[in-house]
Image 1 (tube, rainbow, N blue to C red):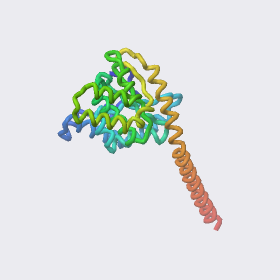
Image 2 (spheres, one colour; image 1 turned 90 degrees about the vertical axis):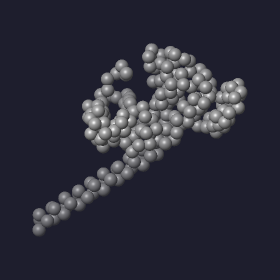
Image 3 (cartoon, rainbow, N blue to C red; image 1 turned 120 degrees about the vertical axis):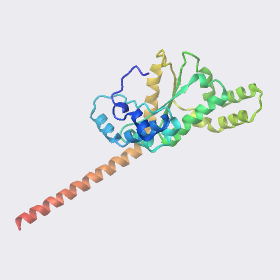
Length: 245
């Protein structure tokens, strides 16, 4: 549970249990259906946020069904809508206790990297639960592919999974080695200062990458407004001419 209350809560708009009953869906299906219903009104959420002043951050907590959300139409709407207005960063929360062997570590890296590749938005990686287990091992693997290979070799299992992990580590290392990251504990609050700093780096990256797109969008908006103003002026002149005849 988050210690902070949500300013906009999907549960105030969509009744999850009623969706299950009405559409005869299971939990996951009901979650995605509720999300689809909410996404149709997401432009209203953006309008509300645009009216707010002095907001340093806007945090959107998405469903835990990562794959389904990432590849769904509603998920795309919810991610793209803020990124069209503000510099937007994805925050991927990894369970440090499940990054203790090369296989699970590589699965985490692939999952986070694939989401970033799909959405084309900078990503920050947060290693959570560091009050239970240190993230030093995962961080060392993140920075050094040879350390991953050494860990696989030390297992001496020689199975296909180990070979696959070694190959993936070599091929994908350049992709995730520069990801901004922070080691945190949601339970104790440790590392939250670092987590606040990591998105700033990703935000600058986002701004630099998105600047040409933002300028293009701004120019298109200006052209549309100019065209609309010209159209209204023509109609006004036409009406005035009709009145003088």
